[in-house]
Amino acid sequence: MSFGENLANLRKQKGWSQDDLANNLNLSRQAISKWENNQSKPDVDNVQKISKAFGIKIDDLLDNDIPKEKAVTLEVKKAEKKEKAIVIVKLIIIAVIILYVISVVYKFASLLIIVNGVQKYANLDNYHYIITTYDENGLVEKEECWFKDGVSKTIATIFEGNEEVQQVSTCLDYNKKIGYVDNILENTNSTLNFDEYVSHYKGYEKGEQFYLNLPYDFRDNNILNIFIKTLDASNVDIKISGDKIYLKLQNMTILLNQKNILPILITYFNDKEYSNIYYLFESNCNEEVII
Image (cartoon, rainbow, N blue to C red):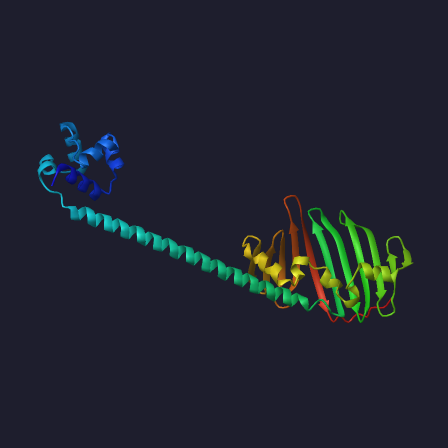
């Protein structure tokens, strides 16, 4: 076997390219190529460098055959390792995709349960609720409402610095189509334009006032929109702890009672401010609503 063939076999056993060997010997790749093709031979200094690089005697390099099978075996092992690495990467990708799909399905199913659970509060005809809103400066607004058999009474209070600055009571009888507004702090009373009020607050006459006070995303029953939300894992997060459900939707977080799927606390937030809204709800309240 020629010197060039020996050199090529030794290089392949090392797993080196011609460039790798050239860099190791501080030579050009063209010089290595010419040696391996027996177009030229290295001088004495380069022969010594080669024997040192491969850890063999000069005589063995010049006179003995280097088994080609070793180089072939090395190439096969490298190919096998590469193939195994590709298989492992594929399996990891498949596992990640499966976990992602499971997460999306779980979140989608959970959101459907929550939305469907909230739907039952859209047409109640007997309830009482209190909704209070706080921001970083304290209490901002309080709304309390009684609704029973088509008659409602709502007291809305506005606060500044935790002090009441406005308090208005709105009473309506949807059966008789009458109503009035009472400004409690100013001690004034006026008859309400019933038709105008109903056209502006659609759904209130059906008992949907509490339901319509919930966030749109939370009460939206459009399955496609809900599914799209779940596709972005960063926009949807659902956790269950004890009897509470933690739900995150974009710039809003909701704390739910797991038993009745009603909100306890909703937090709106952005880069500059946030607000906390607390809910107290009672269905089938005993208090009679009279106007």
